[in-house]
Amino acid sequence: MAEVEIPKQYKAAVYDEPGKVATKIETLDTPEPGPGEVLINMGQVGGHEGVGVVAKMGPATERAVVKVGQRVGIKWIAGNCGSCPPCLEGYDALCRSAKISGYYTLKSEDAAPMLCAGVTTYAALRRSQAKSGQWVVISGAGGGLGHIAVQLAHRGMAMRVIGIDAGSKEKLVRDCGAEHFIDVTKHDDKSIAEEVVKTAGGLGASAVIICTASNKAYAQAIDMVRFGGTVVCVGIPEGTPEPIANAFPAKLIMQGVTIASVAVGNRRDAIEVMDFAARGVVNTFLRTEKMEKLDEVFQELKEGKLSGRVVIDMQ
Image 1 (tube, rainbow, N blue to C red):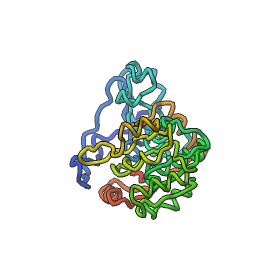
Image 2: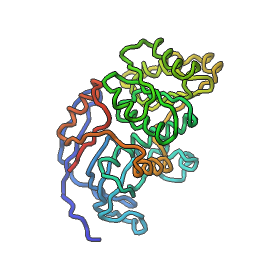
Image 3: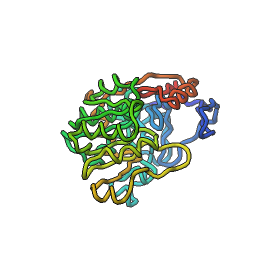
Image 4: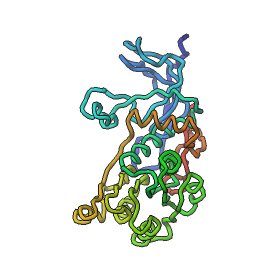
């Protein structure tokens, strides 16, 4: 295949002031791919992840399964060694590098969110050990990760879902398959846990997946799970780190509760999620915005007004 024309410079959305809702568009020199690397012209980006076209192959890539001009998908962590203990035991993400190619008949804007939000929440559901027919709580159910988690749990894994989020997101959460919805703004920590327990047959949910970056959500989760249940940490709260409130050793021990965590899934998770998406089992509720509107998108996220996912069009 002929070489793709590569510009000497490219546009980049730069976020270099953590804690502030501010980005800037800069023009940077286009890098050269090193040994074993490929240069990708990004098309659509859903956050950490994206979809684009291979523009150039670096040295020592003669046997690579991807070629110039091929559309590929990139997970959050986009390369791994394959030989360290985490990689050998299936924890690709903990190697801090993992690659996957997007061999799926999906539109790029639909595929992009699956490579982070989809892979991560699917891994979290698997890590929870919850089984089909059991109750699972998705906290932050109307967000970019949460609404995909609801679909994967309900449509892909036959779980019964309780979605928790602001009331404005109820329709989206129910459309994704939640059997019960709880408006977080109408409850305090005690009453929200009581409603979950009541809904889940008086015992509590088998798992709570925390997709929101809220310390409060973590504190509430401990009282929502049944005996032998699992709380899975996904969302990372901002600001000064806080321990999970209510996670008292005696309570965890007497109830047999497990606290687990997921950064992102491995290759198997990615392949299975992309297959779910290709078969129409899970869909991303999204809108597409240009890179120049990134600050506005961040502001919506900060104010909790964003439903579903936003994909940034890099073209």
